[in-house]
Length: 292
Ligand code: SF4
Image 1: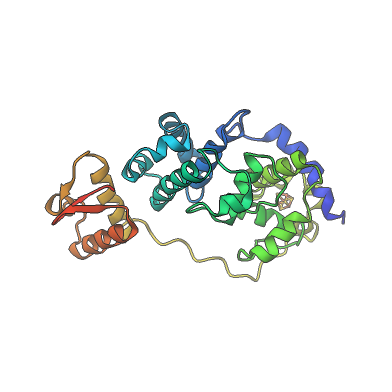
Image 2: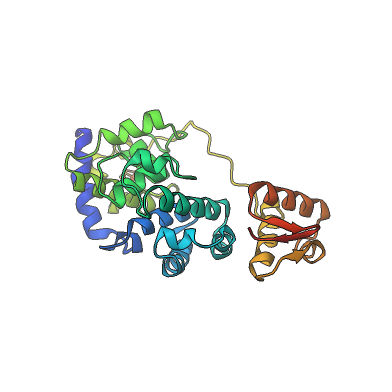
């Protein structure tokens, strides 16, 4: 079996030929755009992110442009991307970048980590993809490729930064640019070739050195993760319906108007309480609600 370092060359070459043309990969794409895209991509597929990202960067091309508007405008522009607390965090991030960094996205992982809503993955992804720093970045796709190609497992075990980051670090090429391309290439490979349910090994640049393939694709004894809860009828859907109604108007809405958006009164009450607690809505007067 070839050594770990042998993964980088084939992946970097493959990425140069097969990478999808995505906005954040184009030359001159701003670091602010990378940060916004990473927030959006956290829980939303690429195809839904691209049009929203384009709108955001047209309206708010810099952090200070977003920081100058109320947080509610970020929630409004988030539209149906889901998990809208990310919009509030992004707005808080824009304010912090404007106040602490003169409006320039910092390039250092620790400074990025100190921004609101920026976790370890996002900080590393921005440092690597926007600034070309040499750090391991590990997302779900990369964990799966490492599990299969290096460890001979059918699926990645649960995330564990203490295991995942050193594992990726051990594979990184020395050169900063190659390391960034390798990070992006591994992510792309997991997204479009080494997919969770139907890996396309005949298209894979690692086919001749993949430990799982070499072992004959042994099955997993790790139980599959429970499927996600249904969105239909969930409290999440109720929260989404309330936010949708508030996004559609520049004015506050009375509780009676909003209640029509959710058929179950108990669910409506839970949704309102949750949105208030999260800061996604405010109550400017009794029984009246608005975006912040
Ligand atoms: S050979 Fe198949 S299982 Fe192995 S890394 Fe490539 S796509 Fe994944």
